[in-house]
Image (cartoon, rainbow, N blue to C red; front, side, top):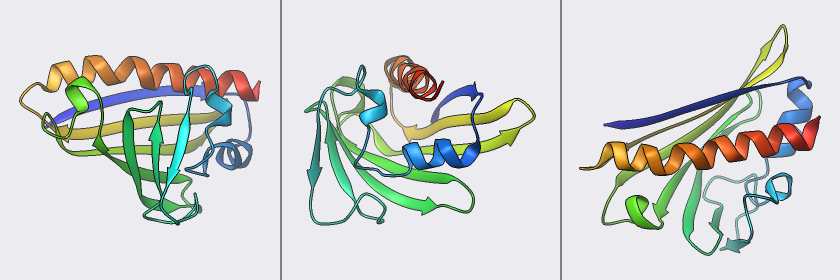
Length: 140
């Protein structure tokens, strides 16, 4: 099983960060990374089953939300290159916020099954790093 693990510490209250990222259909905070977001289906951005297509390439579904724990998870159902549906299985991303003495630690992890796990990680890690940097920039 492959994994990605990315973190960033943001000097902002956990509730403010959660409010910024908890809507699966709103990535306005990542305007430099996400160039388009198309909502698919009728579920709202806080409802399990909400679907979206990012940058006309990444098809994702919200699989869990826990506002009290400041976490959500999603699947990548299809995408470009190493995250295409015929190249990877059971891709689950998890975003979790943790209060620290220096603000809030944002963890963005994923797990997946692929014959090319390293290729998937090398493809996804820079995207997660860019998203985390954009989140921090939007809040500070």
